[in-house]
Image 1 (cartoon, rainbow over the protein chains, first blue to last red):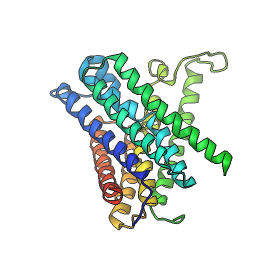
Image 2 (cartoon, rainbow over the protein chains, first blue to last red):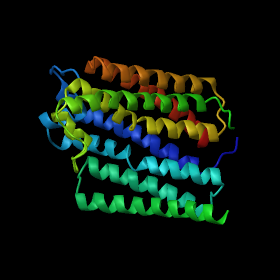
Image 3 (cartoon, chains in turn green, brown):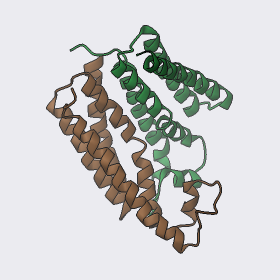
Length: 140
Length: 142
């Protein structure tokens, strides 16, 4: 079965999000032992009672549920437009690479300046992909 | 491609999200009125500010709606990948429907009883379904 190569970056980033889900569970799990959890409690409540860097993987998981939804949408748009030029494939893989680096920074050292630069770099890739989709629509 | 069976669970979970949307406002707006909050004069603020104002059972519906805007976005992405890659495995279809069913149960638990242990167990089961789908996607695409 041949497939559009732009599907690869989507699968990679979805898979990476599940890695971060495990990371957040492993980081927060020890703080749940021996506690009674009230009905309706959420991750945010855990952060209030146990602030600290073990919440950083969870912050990043939340982040992965935000802007990457735009990435998935625009990649599907480009695929359905048939606009899988190599530049778009590079931008898509670069987006995934920057997001993984962003996760690693946020979950470990969490230096905001570095995190911000990686987020900015990823956003520039998304901006490029979105611009190409818009130009594709205008020129079709 | 347009009648690929994997599109059905995608549409089902989208529709369920709209059910939770209606449930959220059907409980939240009357609760806001009861608590004396007037949305007409309010400026700024975020929905989570209501956690400290409204009864928690009211906010549980909103918590679940917010939750449906999180991990299911991965589910939509991976299902659309499988559709576009032409995946015809019945096991992928079962996993997708199981994901939708578990998310509906997860919504009902969070909106009604909200016992965290049950909610967490259901979330983990649905995450396993998602991982199965990702496994199919990896096999299809790489």
